[in-house]
Amino acid sequence: DAKTTQPDSMESTEGETVHLPCSHATISGNEYIYWYRQVPLQGPEYVTHGLQQNTTNSMAFLAIASDRKSSTLILPHVSLRDAAVYHCILRVGVQQGTGSKLSFGKGAKLTVSP
Amino acid sequence: GGIITQTPKFLIGQEGQKLTLKCQQNFNHDTMYWYRQDSGKGLRLIYYSITENDLQKGDLSEGYDASREKKSSFSLTVTSAQKNEMAVFLCASRDRGHERLFFGHGTKLSVL
Image 1 (cartoon, rainbow over the protein chains, first blue to last red):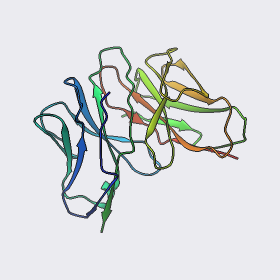
Image 2: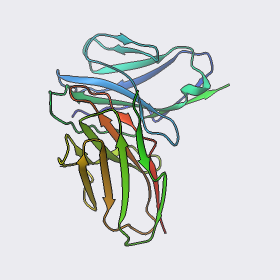
Image 3: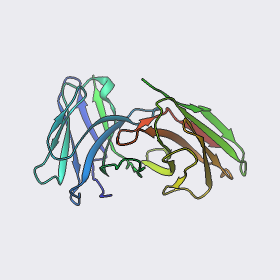
């Protein structure tokens, strides 16, 4: 799987809109971009994923560059509960009946101040 | 909704001891995973299983055994605990055809 590059950390203030960047310059055409977040003492939690088009859900907006070499997870109006480590990972779409090795890097630690 | 339960939450062992960690999921998911997370680092895949009685090695399988005797459970054994070892072991599951992983809260291991 292609690797991703994220900043080690980012800081924000409650109410701000946060842009978390992820670089994946060697992404393959069949690789999806996934975002998970992890708070202390818990396992990662799924946030969103996309292939080519921007996507949005109740948690975040995922903006994918037209060349797919980078993406940005946008968190609108962050609160203290959004403080977490955010992981950007790539994965080939899963075929029926097959497992997959899904690897996580260190991620980007988002700090939210009151 | 379902849940993934890992037991125990905290595990303290002695050097050289064999230690077993358990994971149960009631999602009826096919694939289950064991990851290790060291402080300030990413998750490293130890073993995964795509169905009952299946085992696949991850990037960090040396020093570990795993067992998937039932679809709902996946256990991990540290074959010989290393002195001063400290890590969190995370279990996850995924449904066939979907990429979204669901994680348990982890088992924190400390070796004296």
